[in-house]
Amino acid sequence: MDGIHLLGEWYGCVADMPEITRADALRTLCMRLSDDSGMSIVGESFHQFAPAGVTGTVLLAESHLAIHTWPEHGFVTIDVYVCNYTTDNSAKAERLFQAIRDALRPQRAKFQAIHRGGMDA
Image (tube, rainbow, N blue to C red; front, side, top):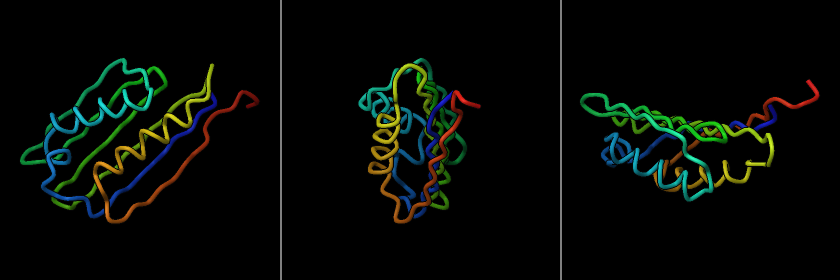
């Protein structure tokens, strides 16, 4: 299915920020920003690691958001994938990705955008 997959590696995030260290804070942020971007949330799961660090997903009707934090390294990985089956959701994906980046404020970032699928395959 035609879609866009946004991938980020974020370095130099504030290591003691609650949204990087605690599952409840990261869940709240991701759910709010997914909703604010116009995505349709259909589920979520976030796991807290000890002593800190989180892995989480937000299931979207459009596809998903996945995020993983390593506070001890100030490091976050994120991917936002949306399909464009009946409508182009690329702008929503880009808004969501950028909003989370703005919230976590990495000092340095790597970014990839992969165009996936296509009906002519």
